[in-house]
Amino acid sequence: MPAGKRRQSNAMLYTLITFVGLFVVATTVAVIYYVKAEELRTQTKELQDRTEALATAEEYRNLGSIVGTKLKGQSNLGTMTQHLDDMIRLIKGAPVETTSAEVKASNAVKAVAVALRGARAYITLPAAEPNAADPNKATDPNAPPKAADPNAVATKQVALTSVITDLLAKLKQTTELKNATEKQLGDLQQKFNDAVATWDATQQKLAADVDLCRQQVDKTKADYNDLRARVEKNADERAQMLTSQIDQAKTEAKQSNQNLLRTQAELNVAQGRLQGALTQVSEIKPAPDKEVAAFKPDGEVILVDESAGVIRINLGSDDHVYRGLTFSVYDRSAGIPRDGKPKAEVEVFAIDRMVSAARVLSTGKKNPIVTGDLVANLIWDSSKQNQFVVAGEFDVDGDGKVDYDGVRKVEALIKRWGGAAVNDVSANTDFVILGKEPQVPTEPTLDQQTADPTAKEKYEAIRRSNERYNQVRQRAEALWIPIFNYDRFLYFTGYDSQIKKPGAF
Image (cartoon, rainbow, N blue to C red):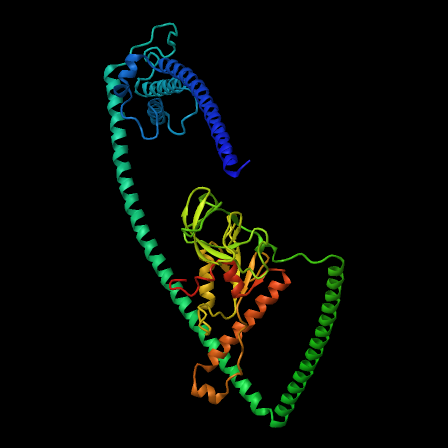
């Protein structure tokens, strides 16, 4: 089946699946909404029954006048409970027992009744004394009690009120005296704390001064002892000590050199064995082509308009193609050659969802572009972002001179085509682009540095560039990462014909 038909069928299938999924989701939401509505209706009925049990409709309408101002963070019932607890606490004192309002009110009434009986006993006159005329005659227990004298009761009440008033006055005086005494005590305590703080600060300062003086004394004493030891040590002893140190350093250097030579020899032997093993393995089974990823085409030509110099390729916006992307064109039968040199170069200028139009930048008359030819760009990939490491010296514009910013320009091209430029080679690196190896000159002499103050800096920069170049190359070879020179890089990206034109970078 052609690619276009297959993609249309897939689109219709995806649309049907989407409609069915939306229908199932809508049905599920409707059922959930109905069940939730029934649940809310039941809860509403239960809440209404509870509200009618708490208060009648008339009481609920007058709830504000019955309860009063609702306390913060409390319900109306909680506010009434709080007021009841405050009243019980005022009558019986704290703490308030945790029980029902009925029991609280009953206990408070009982406590008030007991208090009233005590007060009544205090203000009621004592029982009638025996008959003074006949002391032997006892009082008849069955006789009705004698009524209390109202004047005596009033006298008792007045006396009790007077006592309470006097006690309140004395309590007020005592409270005022206590407050004044506490204020004086607080002032004295503050003065005492200030004095203690001042003393502590003075003590800490004196202790710090003492420590500083002690450190200065110890340092002076140590300097004196050191100076005395140096003065007492004669020149022969110092020479002997220095000679001993030099001999020890020579011995350690000699031992380190021997260890280094032995390690180097062991490394050479190991590398020889490894190389022999690799040779034997390659004879048994040839090593895979590490550059195979570079020879994988990205698409093919599906239509050619020679008169307009335009072709169409089977890559579009679905494949993340963008305007200005260049491709190399290769023969369908011959495939991509090892050097990557194409038969033509094209540049995308119009994009559809699955097809793109590209103008022909360069082509050969003897080998024109035909339908079915392959297109490829080393950097661009429709499914991932390739990683590149760039090192060395580049003559990017072909004028015969090394560009000081050649690495930056090559990295800019890589980023333009959707790749990533990183500094170090790792297992995640896809390709390495190497220019010419930087040639390290002779280290400048003192006279040359005097004549050119930047000579040493230039030498170090070239030396570091050379070290990085060799490190990148060796690391890439060890990890079997494809290495391309500048020419192959331009061939594989379809940009060889554009590199010398203005605005190429």
